[in-house]
Image (cartoon, rainbow over all chains, first blue to last red; front, side, top):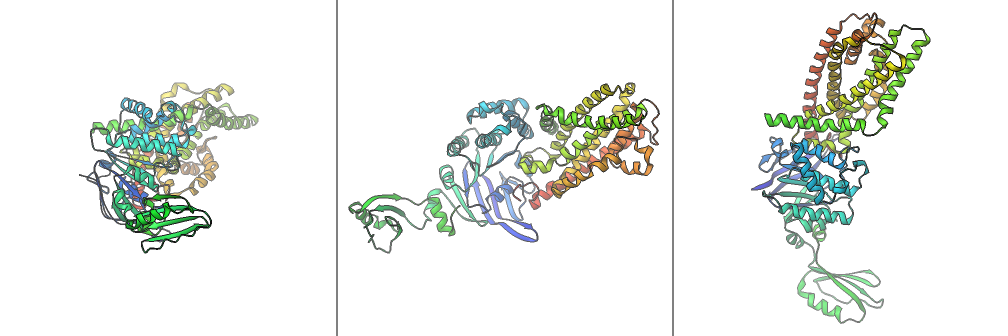
Length: 312
Length: 271
């Protein structure tokens, strides 16, 4: 069964008589129980899509269903089964403590007071926030606040969790904690849990998502596993070389491109791995070459190849 | 049905909680919510004393001075609340929860009114002790018949205004600030408005506060207090206000939510 299904989904905004199309004919199918990532630069339409799926916005054209329910007509059926957590979110009331805040949102979501308090205890322990439970929100750091937002999203044990840039602005360690917990969460529990993550951090999408959709300028331009998408990169592998100043790279082949980035640094792009052995031998036995390192294509390379622009 | 009712009650309880906690958690509440209204009352009482006015005039000022902060709370904490909730990102969370916005606003109303009623009682007790003012406490039940629908109708108006202010934007906050003194005047907060000018009083009665203050003075003030409209009728009018304002609030919230989802301009911070 599908957790998310969109057909020719479009969304436009009219501001000062100017129409801006944020989503263009999005056709998306996300299987229940999967971790799906939407990768794209700022302004690509990721947040608009997630706001439509989380019932905050209506589509301009086309259809969108979440867990089989239409976002236009079955708003409450979806709201009972989903949670939305956004990055950089400063929601809540500064004078409430962490546990009071979570209790309040849990009651909005239909939980009773005792169940809410037990769940708060459990989740605050898991994300390492139990010592901050009595701290007022105004006193929390950005990282702690984002962990609290994540706990809020997980309180009701949603069937589908929408995460909109959940690690935005977090330091590396906390972002890693958040990713670690999400990986664990999706595989726990008796029912199938689905996560739709939007991010412009390719490493995050690469690490977490079974399937990734690349979105740019409101269009879904490619979908597949991380490995499938990386195959769309313009090259098969690349070498970064540092040499002494006298060295002049003399490798010539239609299957490679060498770029001299500074007096003693080159980047070689291989477009066909068949010539890799030849390149490798040249680099290994050349006394003017001090170091060389091989890199495989990343999601960002694939993104550049697909769109002609960078993620950031 | 039963599940829906429990959900509604829990939502109201949850949203009322920060209002009540927010009112009392930090000691500054005493200064802002009791000290400042008290200062206005003290000023008026000294002006009245300097003219050798009858003692009951001082009780007019005390009643008006206790009721006025309720109006300010309605305007600045209730009507502008959704705008604030939008800016802080809370509105998005409210709207993605299965709780109805009407329940959430009812929670704000319950929490806000409980807080302000307690402040009003504090101001009343301190002012009456400071200036040795007596009231007809035997009429406490009559006072409640006027006071409760007055407070609820004011907060219901606040609920209805909240959607409009969300759409209208920040400029309305500025206009509300400008209207503070004219509203103090036409509601007769510190003097009996019906004795000044009947047309002005009728115009001022658009705001339930005018009728509430007048009704409370009729039942609590010792001595002659002439009003062309009995407190009983005023209570009935206030109940009608309350019901109409609740209906308006519900309709305006439905309108606001539809507009928000269609246009994307109301609930989303980045729009």
